[in-house]
Amino acid sequence: MSKLIEIRRRIKSTKNIRQITKAMEMVSAVKLQHDQALLNINKKYIENLEDTIKKIVTYKEDLNTIDTKNALIIVITPTKGFVGPLVINLEKKVKELINSNKNKKFSIIGVEKKSLSFIFSLQIDVLAQLSLNSNNIDDIYAISDIVLTELKNKKIDEVFIVYTKFINVISNQIIAEKIYPIETKKEDFDSLYYIKDKDPNSPSIYDIETNFDQLYENALEIYIPSKIQSCIIEASTSENAIRMITMRNSSDNAQELNKYLTFESNKIRQSSITQEVIEISSAANI
Image (cartoon, rainbow, N blue to C red):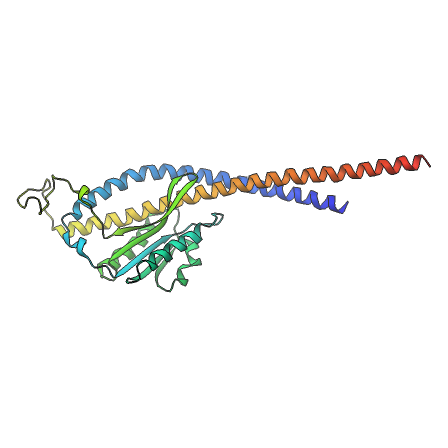
């Protein structure tokens, strides 16, 4: 009888767990839907912005000859738990980036609380550890201001972002993306633009009244926070997708365990009833 009571307690416990995981799955699904809509809108914007900044960089020839010695890593971690080995994989990616560039001096900015679990153990300078408030633009600027200040003071000359790129609901990829210096390729060049090595006398399609260096700095002040925000949206979308799948699997496992425990409970109960019937029949035959 004590075993039957214990099994009934476990059945009640698994039902409660399934209710919680099911609720968390639904919450993550709603957040995922919101993030996906935001991601789709932002992708077009960031593509156009990158296209524009690359065209501006074609004038800035010295960017392609920078000897990078001091690099900054911005690592975007999950806001909460129940995301499997995601934090561990992000840490591995950061370490991989550092180990593959041993000739550079690295510093790091940790975004979200989960970054606390490893950024201070990397033995590199920690410039900041920040927690975001639902992608509030002021929080984004808090990160980009640090980056822009470090670039302006020439304390860093290269910037990486390590984050989880959203591919689809069941697939994601942890990448380390270099966002500065802005790299251009030959296919990024447009023949309509002034390119010195092709035609020194070719006019630009733009008449720039301001100083070009000032134009480039202004463009950078738009590009850096926009790129950081884009990566944060990608990371948030991936996080909610992972959590939704994790909670769904937990709900399914709780349901399977509940079925097994119910079967065991019925078996013990049936065995008890059979034993009582035998005892009654035996007593009646005496």
